[in-house]
Length: 337
Ligand code: NAD
Ligand code: TYD
Image (cartoon, rainbow, N blue to C red; front, side, top):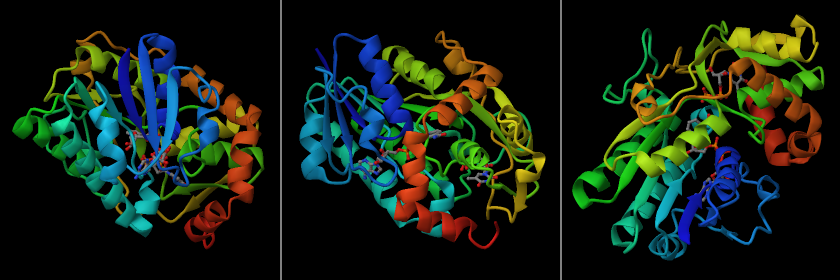
């Protein structure tokens, strides 16, 4: 059995990865370590909770007493755990520094001592490059993160690299573009806009809405990570981009069309401070290993919109009954919607 530690596995991408990996690798035994912050939810692991090759541990990656023995027992670490929402980082970045930077340090320090560790896959993001006016970011481009979330992820990304360069920890770094898929927390654009549209609530589009993102289906991301665990070289960084670039305003209209909702639900609201105008990844390095995205954005978005329509049980309690979410929504949108 291959012992795999997945941090942040109760979140959006982590839970999709745990499901994907258990199905793809009959010889993997997965431990999910997750603090269950507001974004981490046990129902995300519903399908695998009783799986004989999966166990869940509630704990903080920044707590060495919890993290060290788990890393020591692992052959593979896939490190998703992070605070992830840009707008929350703008409100208050403290938790981002603590989890994304210090938490990554705790895991890397443990990885340095782990006797059988073969791979430490650091889940980074295209946001570390900052806004790209034209062309596409390649892995050797300068990092120019422009918001506190992106800066904390850039810190973690380079810290992971330094533990390879300095201590020989077998770190591979994956920088993915914006993911979409089932179980994404409804503070992020696509699930927020889809669930608001379903309820005939306004869709708060920041600024002129002409910012663009490079959308990647979460399953294509999982496939890429799986390939990188097999073929990625320690010390190397790989971009994982969907190649489906779309302006936010066009995406908003697509969502409204798919749900047969009026264009009047689109509401321009003041822009996000430091809002990156455009992300776009060059993925030649990953494609050379044999990966290409398999889910086209059109059908992928349609399926995901259907998932949120058919799974209100998943998002409605968060949006309507979770006081922390209500407080966040009020603070973020109360004055503008
Ligand atoms: P998410 O917010 O849905 O999930 C994050 C998970 O980490 C949650 O389950 C949360 O409980 C857990 N967590 C947070 N702090 C923790 C701590 N201190 N200890 C243990 N667990 C903790 O995020 P996501 O969208 O699934 O993102 C996962 C990773 O992928 C992150 O590292 C993120 O930076 C990266 N990423 C995300 C995207 C995207 O579009 N969502 C794109 C590129 C990279
Ligand atoms: P988001 O899902 O927060 O991801 P990221 O900031 O990591 O790219 O946002 C995606 C895009 O949608 C981004 O350009 C910001 C924009 N956006 C809005 O216009 N309104 C919103 O309410 C949110 C949450 C995002």
